[in-house]
Every structure is written in structure tokens, then in C-alpha cells.
Length: 406
Image 1: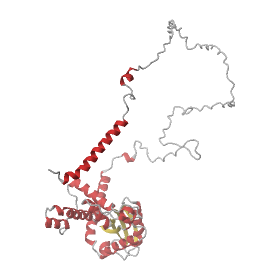
Image 2: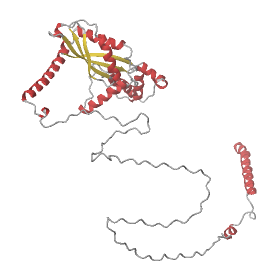
Image 3: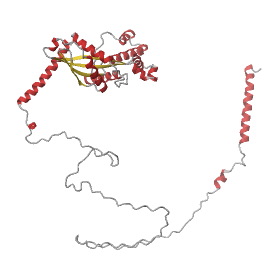
Image 4: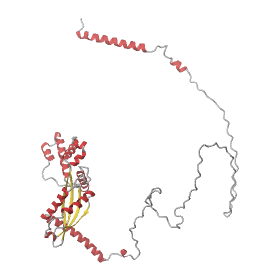
């Protein structure tokens, strides 16, 4: 029986493998040292380790002689002066000659009197403010703060109890102020729709929006999402207190609700629905509340001339407060006379306004945040390499709202 063609093809490979293994075995046998050349392990273990020991006799130290107990002489009375003890002069010791220059003698150190010496029994004044070091030119002890207190003595009029008449007057004035504020708020809701107040509102908003120095960057705002962050914080605080984040529900169905009705619970549509819901949440936070608010009280004469403008509640941003107080008087300088129904027979009109600063995040950044909420990373290149340009595209808007008409 003849071998098949497949076996004939495997024969050269098998022969080459056998020859290769034989060559490797021969190389290993030749490289291995002979038994005569290798050291015997028995001989290695038979060689001892030599250790040299050197013993030296050290004499034992003799114990010290016992000392007799010291006897103390009776102490002399305090009136007797003890004589000075005589010290044994030290033996002269030969000193090596020194090549260093002799140090000059130090002047006697001036002893300063202790603090409070010569001041009698008066206690030392306690100073809690650190003072400058003595070597600093132009420095001295800290200036004493001006005393603003007043010492009350028996019989002081301020210690006398308030009379019933004075208490009644004070409470009456407080209640009257509350009533006036309530009536002023209600009057603003009614008469505030008059065209005159619409003109005042438009004049303030136009002047604040067009005057240089009122941009978000000029006011020190660097975060384009500062308005959204503030609105989210307010919603979280309100939800923690009341269980409701606040805000009015939209009048029409949102895009996320339409997608839920269209696709139901299809997993393929979850990402699209999450992106839509995230964008709707950001839009609601972006339009929830103003970033900066300040309360302004204005007094106008019967002819429309501005008499006074002052801030009653600050916003927390000094630049914003100063900008509003600088621009508003010029915006209301040439107003027409207020209506008689608002004056109600008085010589001036007193109103209270709330000036708001709204920061709107750029749309491209809103889209990027929405994509991150859905698990996608689609950040614009400007946001990564030039974040200052994102702040330039943010929109800062001024709004004025009438609060009270007194």
C-alpha cells in the first residue's frame, strides 16, 4: 500500500523538526560544564568558616566609698547676714595661643524697668491689636478706637419705662407704616398700568441697557451660567421647604411630553427624550428669576422733576448697585408731570421700583449641557479653547418693575 500524497508532504517538515531538536540537544550538551570542572557540593560544605575571637581582661571598678550623711547646721535667723563662701582658686591651665583677634568688650546692658513699674497698683491696659516692631520706621502703637458707648447712671432718663402714651404712638406709627406699604402695593397693581408708569419703566430700562459700563463683564460676572445656577439653588431651597420647586407649569405640552406620547417606553427613544427634557429644564431655570435685583425709591415733583433717588435694598454686587444709582437719575430727569390720580393732592410722587439684571446663557452652551445630561459629549470648540468668548455671547438684560405707589 503506497502512502498518500499528504503524508509525503509532511515528511520533509518532520525530518527538519527532528534535525532541529538534535541540534539543540547537542548544543546544550556541549555548553554544560563537565563533572570534573564543577565544584563538588560536598567539598563546598566541608570548608569551615573561620572566626577569630580576641579576649581582653578588663579590671573591675571598685565601688565608691560610702559617704557619711550630711549634717545641716541650724539656719541662722534672717537678721544675721551669712558670710560669703570662700572658693578654692582654680589651678592655672595652659592655654593654646589663639590667632583670632580679641573681641572688644561689650557695653553694659541697660536694664529696662519692668512693665508697670512706677505706675502704682493700676492694672496694665490689655491691647489685643498687634503693634509694629520697634525697628520699623514710622510705626507706633496702634491707635485707640474711639469710644462710642455711654455710661448709664442711676436716674438716667433712658432707664425710665416708656409711658403708655409713648408706646401707643410708637405702635400706631408702626401699624400706619404697614398699612401704607400694603396700600402702596395694592395701588401699584391698579394704577401701575397707567401709561405714565410705562414711560418711566421704558426710560429706565433703555438708559440702563444703552449706557456703557452695564455689561455683564463690566459688572464682574465671569460665569455664563450664573443665572441658571442661582435659579437652581432657589428651586432646591424651595423644594426642601415646601416640597414644590415652584414655577408655573407651561400652558402647552412640552417636546419631551410629545415624544413620550409618540414613542412610549421605547428604549431607542430614551436618549432623545432625555435631551429634550434637559433642555426644557435649562430654559425654565434660565427664565425663572433675575441674577441681580435692587430696590430703588424715587421721589418726583408735580412738574416731573426728580427730587431724590436712593437704594433701599442692595443686590450684593457693588458695581451693579452703583451703576443703577448713577444711570436712573439721568433717565428720569426729563419726565412729564405725573397724573393727578397718582399724586392725590400732594406736592410730590413717591414710588418704589425693583431693577433686575437678567443673564441669559448662550444657546450653544445650553445645547452642550443638554447633551451631557443624555450621556453625549458635544462641547463647542469655543467653550474648550476660548471660554471668554462664550461670556461675550451671553445676553444681559435690564428690567424695571413697579412695586409701590405711595
